[in-house]
Length: 242
Image (cartoon, rainbow, N blue to C red; front, side, top):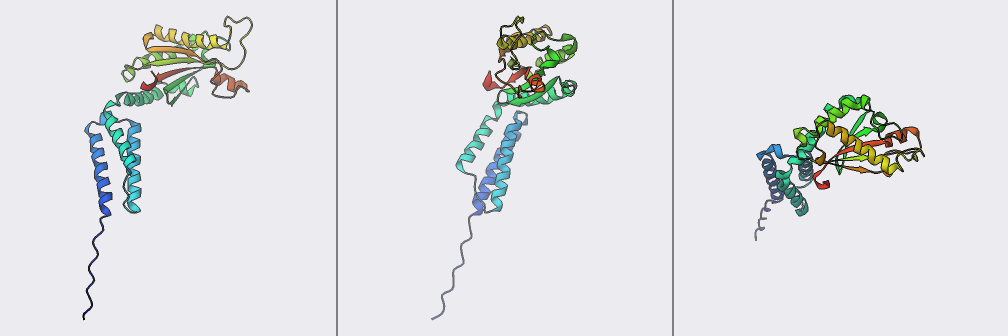
């Protein structure tokens, strides 16, 4: 009796998972290209990361994106049409870095960002004497003019702003007209707003707050640290913090 011939093995279908993921990601990519003006840098980074992850996984055996990852990616794509404000804030940051380059170089301004939005910090020693809320306008007029023009720019149309005053932890002098650092910090914020309004910004787009010495950026144990803590932050608010 002859030996029974061995049936050939069925071809593997593992490639279908990788192929399906590739088609899905290509679809997402072309959806983005449909209106690239709506793409936010953060969203692009998220999708790029997904593409890189997929490339890595396919090398090790054609693994698929999980349902949760696909869901997150789908949510990102679905939200792209509503990202105009995020895009404008990204453009505003680039413009601010360019516009305020002289002020950044001279240590009058720093530009940072956090979950609240874009933060322009006026380093207080350039704007106020210690324990005072009166602006040193002769030294800072040009900077304030640039700030006013920036807040009126098209990139910030429809945005809201908050001016936050801060102090170091030194107790106000007995002869000060401010009972405590709370009033001093609030007065600094209000005075900045008054000058910006004189230069044409709309006051109704702004709010003010005083935080005294409760939110230091540096240690108050040194004169340098206290100098940096005496500051005014102007925040271009993210939509979720209006």
